[in-house]
Amino acid sequence: MPRTPQPLHIFRKDLLHLWPETLVVLLLFAAFAWAAPSRWTGSENQIAGLLPLLEVLLKFFLMPISWLVVISRVIQDEPLVGDRQFWTSRPYQWPSLLAAKILYLVIFLYLPFLLMQIYLLKHAGLYPTTAIPALLHNLLLLTVIVVIPIAAISAVTSTFPRALLAVVGALVYIIVLSLVLLYQLLRHMPAPELQPIAIVLFIALPLVALVLQYARRRTAVSRGILIATPLVIALLLLATPATALIRHDFPVASGLKLGDPPAEVVPHAPRPGDLMVFGGNVQLSLLFHLTGADRDSSYTIHGAAISLDAAGAHWSSSYASGMGGRLDGETPISVVPVVLPVDVFNQFSHLPTTVHLSLAIEQVKAEKPSTWTATRAPFAVPGHGVCSFPANPDSDDAPTCRYPFSAPQINVATAPLSQACGDPSAPTRVGFTNISEQSTSLDFDPVVTIPMRFSFNGQEPAAGYSLCPGAKLSFTEAHSAGKSRLEVDQKGILLENYASHFPPHTRLQQRPFAGPENQ
Image 1 (cartoon, rainbow, N blue to C red):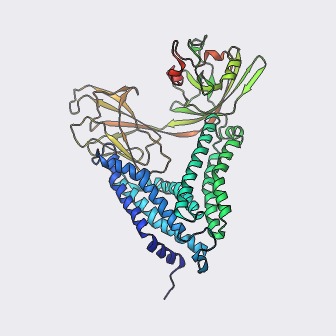
Image 2 (image 1 turned 120 degrees about the horizontal axis):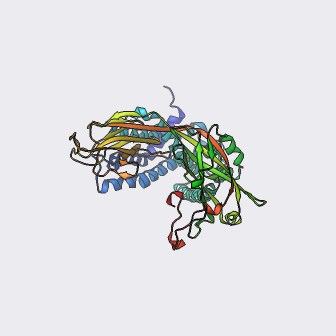
Image 3 (image 1 turned 120 degrees about the vertical axis):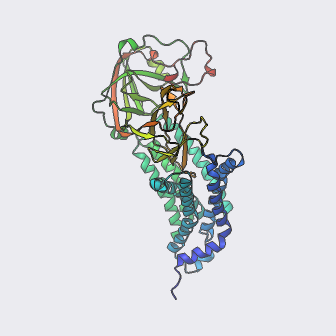
């Protein structure tokens, strides 16, 4: 009779020991699959009451806690800390022990998680086969964000209470370090080339600590690796000189140029009111005229570096993260927001200054529009989505679209709207709606619901008008078409004319910080 492979023998022993915890995890997966549709916008299962609250409770508390319990218990069923464990006196091979733990988590965590998401996609009328890359990406995020860190912490602690305290301490440590890192990254743009390296380190170092603990049981070394991981990533992002890497990643644009705006729009005096200072910085709204732009493209500003020269004085900055600015070839005047430290602004504000601006931009190019028909039955839309009208034919509510994990990043639709569906003589107008959402985080519920909220000219709400079954929808998607860099000089300008000011007679502490669009 063939012998049972050692990993399967350990797996069976773990199942006998941990079946209560495992059963709770499986029941919570089933409960979430039942409760999640209650929060889908426009769903027939959308229920007001306790069921949506149950979904939130499961998503943010019960399911994560159950995963923590199962992962730590399955790892600590053969403790790796100390030198008096019973299993070290048995003929256990550490690769077999680690393989058994991986097999247990695959069967009772990964597989139920995947089946739950497939069920929710099917229940929403979507096709799981079109979402296979997103499903696999979600499993990868589950591994990186949840499984590896908790397994590594469990491997360097001897009991579940200690593992729980270590997880809480790790969360506090990472949150504090992330806030410091976020504050710095808001002021200094990180090099895009460093981000994949940071992700690899976040995966590899805890994995090394876990394997090292199984192979050698070097608890002190493994704990040191885990503690050092967030710090190493933070130092990588903060200490690496990013300017050269950014210039390499954003080559000089070919054919696209920023020039001086028409003379009639150049400000000749500062706005009245107090200077707007936020966090020790002053915001400038520089004006340019963009030429050579692709007609079907816009350009997102990822970062800006500025240098100033006036009366023998010089100051320059590193690349700062973009403030949401966007360039558009169809707009005659482009407003580029930049910030300066208030002391630098005071030094140069009244002097004719030569400004050199370097913009790291990304081209977003619109594809050719595609036409889809809105039907009373659920109808397909770009991005593997499905849209549907309310179940009640007399309802004036907008149709709702569902997507697997996320809608396209930019997905604008136009359609004729009518004041009275079924009446050919009723007034009609063309409406616009933006069905966009981008998700990169770990998703429990793979279904994203976005209502079609139409407006006129992108601003005026389409009150009194609605989309009717049989109407033709024109969708325009957009995608990234490459990164580039714009270099431009403006000579002899007065910075005080471009600075943001509060309206006259407005107290500073009562006004929020405003961007150029609010001035």
